[in-house]
Image (tube, rainbow, N blue to C red; front, side, top):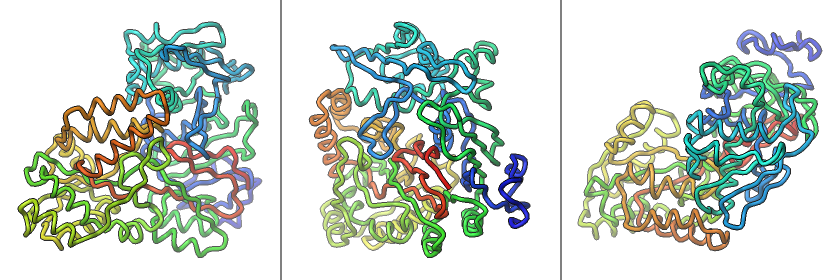
Length: 518
């Protein structure tokens, strides 16, 4: 049907019509995406903790500071015009950018920033823990987050941390909402949460036009955006679960971008001269957790042997084919202190030598919990096969994600295979996860003094020393840990060639539409 519809008659009602019944040529002023975003359960930035919801937040809400999407080691001021830190390292002062307005027309002030930061803590939803790390609690946050003057806000921490650690957390958890607008919808002291779950009160480059859960998301350009209005007028995202359907829509020109193609499909569309592939390495890792509660997996030689019984390259080239790259340490590449060493490759002789040293020359039997998600199951099948060559018999326990995670969280597994990603762009996120909680606890791994080293690295002020501390921790983990870290996710977007400026950033949220042109 696309020849019957022209851009000039592309209306919102047409945009929200299911693709199964209408195939509309995409208008020049609209970016149309096929994307799986059925994990969006709320649009309130103080509640959002899902991958797709975070991307929505990054495109419609501004934060005090944000990562430079091209160089995430740098931060850009956004709502903040500048910031400084006190001599004792405990108090950060943010000067708010003047002449900035919300979508409502209300000015962006220090009072809005104060309210927004406090709101994260007081609502106590999923992302609240990020600010709780700095001693901000429901009881004290109104004293610790202070309005100095109408355009200046102070945040006092419970102790001095590495400044980059605090600012990296701020870059995710300070989406600033319009206090006046939000409180006008408050019910029963909910800070407007009930209303903001489905509505909008920000100042970002786009604003929310419409959202139908599991169906569509429509954003409109903010013509008054402080840093210049986006070129594209509208973004229409359609929830298309089947990747084969995404491929078909893209090749027909019914969508501009397909976000969830498999490795095989990416290989196919690469041959299409009308389509380009954008790729970006993300801070999400595929790994195996070995529960040392199992006395066999408690043997260091066994854990080392298993690290030599994974065909990393084969899986990167076949199962992931452009959607994952070999990575064997817990800090994702490009984060401070990331150790990009890959000492392990499939080495049957070395593995057998280690198993013999552990007193298990003929191997052993063990179980692996895995979800029925295709990528995870394919990984599990490949590992089951490669480890059998050394006599390790793995029984796969396949279940849905909820069942598998429940067993993992209760430490009822022998081996768990899955993904883990950084909550924010700082090495402490994964270091704490793998070496302290929750992953170390789930795998029953405890090393005396290790947690103290994790917190010492978190608090080190000298970035060079801090980076080296993380490298030392990763080197230790390569040798001793119960983790077989396999791959780092590479996110791909298949884009029609007339679309320029679509940005896949380093984190799961910083996929940006602001610079798109067609």
